[in-house]
Image (tube, rainbow, N blue to C red; front, side):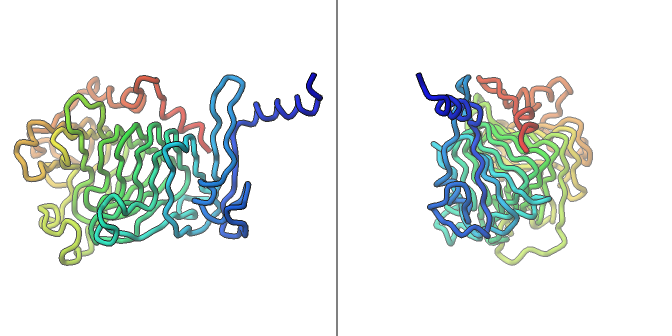
Length: 343
């Protein structure tokens, strides 16, 4: 027979499988902290482990970040699953994770990211991740290689290569993403719903990298808004300064980083600065035969001038790109439902 106190402790463990820790600039402990940390990476490295409930379902680790500017680079490793970063401010602008590093400084694009997310089941809520290198070449704010990743009510800020949506299934909802050149790129299956995607210079919004037509990947922008502010002249030799977008002071919906790139815009408001053809073939006519770029129900695009090699989708065809359908995968993931349960 177990003592009653042990039985009660076991019951508490089973019912309290989630872990909550706090991050604040005011915290004085370092890695020796158990529930409070001064840095986000301290919390990622040293938080207690979440438990498992009576049905065998793993809990989540909620890292609750108090308002402040956190000058650090963070990494969520592959073995670190079900991590949730929660900004505790009134808006995403009150919790900022920031760094400034471009490719020439770091030795390549893929060493520049402010946040590197590799652990499946990751979520970020109500915070900002930025790379402040500006128009100085590739400079990644967030590199996301996690499956079932969610960004809700977040801001991702940069210029060239802001978001490396690289692998896995990803869902960005009620968020703001800013950049100028290829500022969403990679080969994830990602849906951007009710977002604002903002150009801070002429360039290309997406650069998807699907390399074969049987890969179930692509970017879907749905019920969102694309905006642009092209008022400032780019610095000489800045990112994309020699491109057609920069020369024409226009923006494009995307261009194929790899031949079979797939990007779809559905019921999205597009800006007046959009190039008449909408899409760019990255200087290769052969890409027009393999890239799969589609549209349905958007405003701000002229169907008489849009690239003839793009696809105008019927409502039925557009249905396959809903978050529920496009991100389901073999496990039937319902991204929108999971996002709704987040704080």
